[in-house]
Length: 103
Image 1: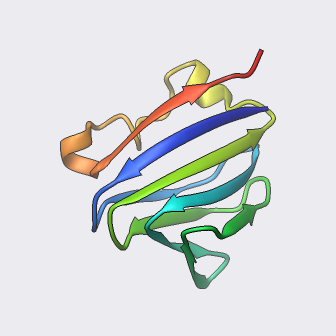
Image 2 (image 1 turned 90 degrees about the horizontal axis):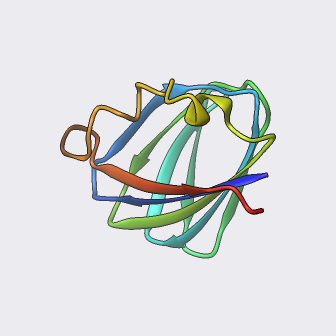
């Protein structure tokens, strides 16, 4: 299991992507609008969203947002820095985060 915290400014976009890992997103502050499986889902402070393995999804911050994402298994693309869709820089995406693997 691995977790990631993200800070996003209004309008920040996490482009559509998918990964082997199942994902649970918990919104600590703010709100994110997800597009997943042809549906739009808004997740607000105190709410949780579960994203199954290999399901394409994207997110847009609706306001200043802090969220916690939990992944299982560990995201190999992050370990190998093979996640270019997020590594374009904070200025372009409006998203910044820190990752940790509990040990």
